[in-house]
Image (cartoon, rainbow, N blue to C red; front, side, top):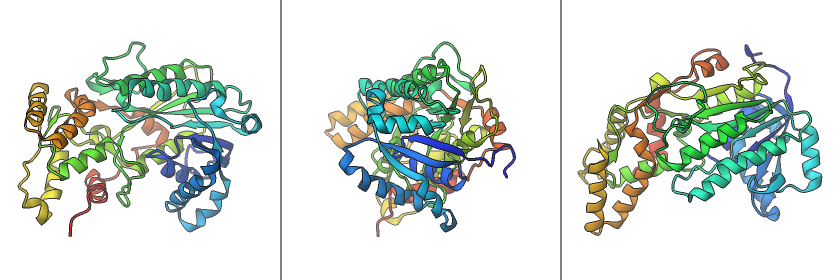
Length: 384
């Protein structure tokens, strides 16, 4: 038995966001740690397609497990639903069965597309969380509601970012940050036994570099590999707080399994799963990516410049120049970068004191260079 972790599994977990970037790794960790006898996986889409989609997803989970954990996969089963619909779009009979058995909800579903329309982000991230809380309130055996949030809720704050929820919102650099902050406020104001896990930017699997679902950071790597982003908005000393998929999955499972951790207290627990002081600066990150790409002969012959961090005015001028020069692909890449990287104008360090207490020591981090190198190879295979 791991210190601070109960060896008594939960009866049933309802997991949302299973098809997202963290979904398979989190499910695999829940299976590996025997977190629950059953794990209901909420999947959106036509019911007729559910079995086939679930089979593919289950295979992805299986690939992350050792053979002696395969029997635990029998506890996984799909449920057709949608967090953007009342009562999650569940059939009445299915809803009743879930409500009788579910003692843990892990709400990881979110719209993480920074370019998505604001109304869409709000509908999924805020209203979707509200619907999940309303539904969970009907679960009589409910013991825990874990909201998977983002460290991006810090917005434009700088310096040390504590594992707290200030009553007043910061200024936000992008709408996605606001929606995640509002989702936290909704959850923390509820009467349910809520916990909030703020996850940093997940690169991919440390072991393989695999990425289940590409996000903004993976698009950035692809653009860098094509020489489309010779400069980026932000301050060079800002930390690029990146973590491996394994770190996030292991810590989220620990939050569910912990014997205490502050669940049910008048001040719901907030954990920041982040690299903290171990996060590299953007200069270190960019230098590493450039060196990795420059080691490829075909790439080196292109003589792409080493990317630089620049101020807002310089970056805006470069986008305008790309437009004026008819370089539409480059301009599109630069605009996409400008939707999420301006957060780097506000250097900060995420504190992980409560997360470390939850884990029982330093978080299970991996060498970021090794992780990034493998993810870069996965996203941008070397040409032969």
